[in-house]
Length: 272
Image (tube, rainbow, N blue to C red; front, top):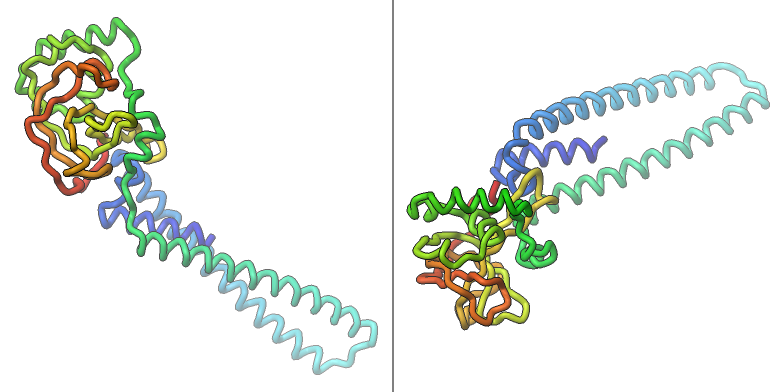
């Protein structure tokens, strides 16, 4: 119960500091905060009830002890009482040990959450979850319809596309003519591409429910020598246009940047 109380309090604290979005989709904030608040009230009430019950038991035990001192007892009754008291003492010791362990676990969790701030998912996680499997619809007809709709959109619209938008389009079509003249302006973190030193993915995670289901999206960026300026997990602002990749093994189309500048991690690093 104490652990539930600590987790609930930490959840409300994360919400109040704006860090809850590092764990769950914002659409679930209200529900999560409400459930955590209910849990806090229930846990406090249960702990208060347990404390009152323990005090009542202590008072009753004191009265019983007082009565035993006043009344003469048979030897058999003495032996029975001693056995009962021994069992009660053993149960009490186990209860105290369990209580101490609960306090230690709860305190450790609280300290870890406060001292070690929540960290966003990294490029290692992006590689582990296979950033190259960015989702299109995997339905040729749906892909063709989406590409046709995007092709008729004004180029200015593409300037507002995110990493996820571009990564989805790259999955749906690799026709160089489609990307010609379309400006790219995205922010993401760098994910190195194994065996491709001249390119990297500008990446973002997209969350549907919580960080557990976060899916990585990445757009390949052609920038020989990028390791001299940046490192994996650095956040960058990339502008440019797409071109054919030539000999690079990252897909037919890559982003040829006109500018790559380092930026601070956004307040909201995930896409929803």
